Amino acid sequence: MRRYYTDDWGAYERHLNPEQHRVGKRNTQKIERKNLNFRT
Image (cartoon, rainbow, N blue to C red; front, side, top):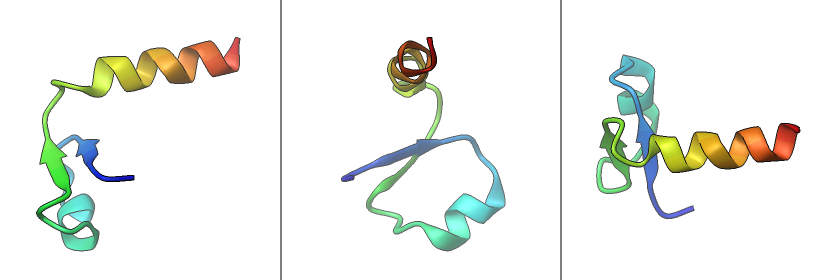
């Protein structure tokens, strides 16, 4: 995985490489849609 899109929870910042970590909801909708499709 090249990039991680997360919320602003501090644990992510401590454990993820800053170059690969993006905070925000810009790309989370696509990811959550895929997760929903896998579950159903």
